[in-house]
Image (cartoon, rainbow over all chains, first blue to last red):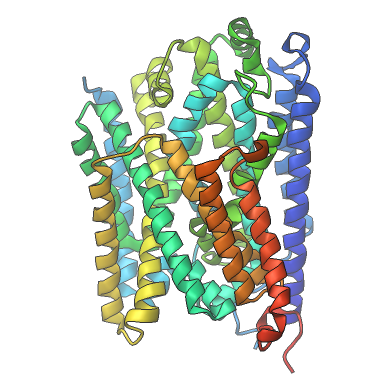
Length: 86
Length: 488
C-alpha cells in the first residue's frame, strides 16, 4: 500500500516539474522571441502586442487547460490515512 | 474627506470576517485535538478553500498596491515579470504533493519544522529554522501591517495610528479566537473578493481608457518601451527576468506559510481541485492587477507615488459603491497574508519551541492557554513596531520571501524525495542559503545581472548534495518510511 502511494506521489511531483518547464518555455519564449524587435514593427493581437498576447494571455490559458488535462487523466486519487496502509 | 459609499462595503466586509472568526471559535472550543485544530484547522480543507487560502496568503499588499504602482512606471514588462507567479498556483501542491500530505498525517506534524524534525532528527535544525521563521516572517508581517494601515489611512482620511489600530484589532481578534480554521475560511472570502475586484477594476479601466487599442496607442506615444518586455528604461533584461522566475514562481515551495497549507487539506480530490482553481485565481489576480497598473497610465497620468495608483484609479473609473467593494480587495489581500503569518509564527513558537524545549509535558489546557497568549503577544508586538514604519513595502517583503526560500527549499524537497539527504547536508545548505542571501542582498543585489535569490538557491542545493554524500557513513540509516520499500 505504502509502496504504491509513494510511487504515484513521486510521479506526480515529476509531472509538476515538467509543467513548470513548459510554462517557463512558453512565457519566456514568446516574450523575448516576439518582443525583442523595434516596438514600431510590433504586430498586435486583440489590441495587445503579439508577444504579450501569446506569452501572458494565451500562454496562461493554455497552462490552465493543460493542468485540467493532466489532473483529469494522470493524477490519481489515493487515501492519506494510515488505517488502510497498516 | 470621508467617502461613505466606500466605507460601508469595507465595514460590511469586516463584519463578515468577524462572524467567521466567532464560528471557527466554536470548533476550537469543542475539538478533542487542540493543536491540529488551532494550527491546521483539523486538516479538513476542501478544494476551494485550499485554493483560496494558498493564493490569498501568497497575494499580498504588493500584488494590489505596490505591484500595479511599479507597472505604472515600467509598462508591460512588469506584467510579464508578474506572470512568473503563475506556477505558485500549482507547483507547490504538485511537488510537495501527496507524499507530504501522507507523511504529515503519519507523524501528526503541525508545522513545517515538525516535518524537518521528524526527517532529520536534529535540534540544531529545529532551532535554526524557528529563528529564521520568526525573524523573517515578523519583518514581513510588519510590512504588511504598515501597508494595511496606510491603505485605511488613504481611503478614510483617518490618522495612521487610528488606521493601524482598526486594521490590527480586526485581524487579531478573529485569528486569536478562531485559529487556522478562521484564517482559511476568511481567506476564502478574501480570495474571492480579490479575484472579483480585479476583474471589475480591469474592465472599468479598459472602458475608461477607450479600449485596449486606444490605451496602447497612448502608451506608444509617450514611450514605446512601455509596450516592450524590457521595461521603460530597458532595465528588465532576459537574464534578470528569468532568474526572477526562480524567486517568485518556483522557490515558493520553500515558503513555510505556503508549504504548511500542503499538509492541511482533506483528501486527494481537494488537492486536484485546488490546483486548478488556485491557478485560475492567481493568474487572474497577477495578470489583472499588474495590467491595470499599465493601463492606468493614460487614464490617470502624472501620479508620482506608485502606491496611490490603484486606489486613485478605482475611485476615478468606478461608481462609488463598486469602488468600495474593489478597494476591499487590497484590504483582503493584506489581511489574508497577515493572518497566515501570525498563526504560523505562533505555531512555531508554541509547537516547535515551547512544546519541544520548554514544556514537553504540557497539558491540553496549558497548550491552549499558551497558544492564545503567544498569538496575542506576537500580534501586539507587530503593531508596536508598525507604529514607526520603514519604507519600501515591496522590497522588505521580497527580502523575507527570498531569505526563507533559500533556507527551506532544499531541506524540504530533498528531505521528501532523496533518501540520502541527511542532517549535515540540511544544516550546511540552510546556512549557505541564508548567509549567501543576506550577503548578496547587502553587497551586490544584482550580481551578474541575476536576481539575488539565484545564487543562494543554486549553491545551497550543491552544498546539500555534497555534504550529504560526504557524511553518508556517519548517519546510521535512511528513514525507511521515506522510501518505496515495504517494511518486512
